[in-house]
Length: 210
Image (cartoon, rainbow, N blue to C red):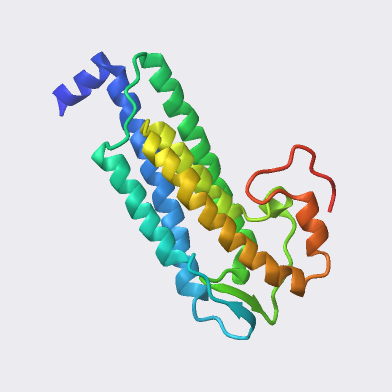
């Protein structure tokens, strides 16, 4: 143990990598835990007014997570940095994106509350939410996971993981979000105005009042 701590003092980059890895693990566990809580609490919720099945749901998202983890852990697609400080910069940027994504996911879930569902559902007591994280992004839960995948790609310097997120996960999330919005437009008369004012996965540069 003493020798390990001594090595950390001699080579501070090892401590940096350890802390970075710890932050990634904590963020991932927090989001997975939040998903599990939502699934347990609201999966069997009744009084569904409208429902639409989607191939994009918790199970398929977890399948992509498994594929993403395989790319990261196997090292396939890892980019080799010639400059140490460039590598550190990518890690720090990735961690920042991860932390923002994790925070957005948690606060978004808390704000969404009982509106959450694995499949696309409109409940009898469904509430139109446009404040909190929803004031800036229409789908903060999906957006935050997209951000976290991009952040992890930067942390681990994996261009294939980055491309997989951009070319597979993002289009799937877009498809799911559009499916949801069909029902939301039907249910809430002011949702179309909300769509025009608030970005789907990224905040608009000019965010007008809703």
